[in-house]
Length: 88
Image 1 (cartoon, rainbow, N blue to C red):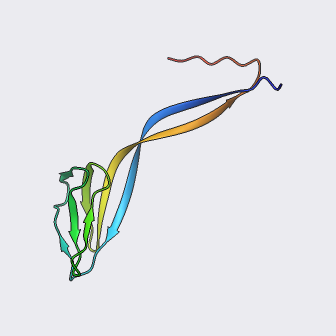
Image 2 (tube, rainbow, N blue to C red):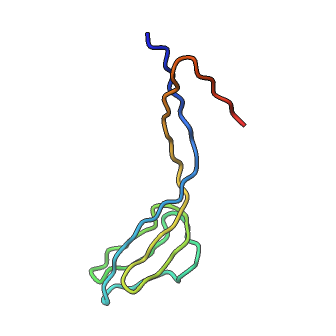
Image 3 (cartoon, one colour):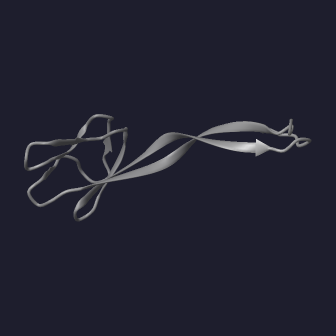
């Protein structure tokens, strides 16, 4: 056996999702506003709804709705044999 151990580090990471829209679509949110998961962001001209996949803050640009939110992330680290891990 190599003696290596694997440690999973869980943390919050800022994520961004962008949703493009056209002039025919109706944007249902305002720049800088907080939204809840499942809240409607855009109503497409064909009647389709674009919903927020997570709670976050909206940033509007000329033709995009950007959702900025925190998501759980996990990173695995290999710890070589003989090393110690100090946690603060």
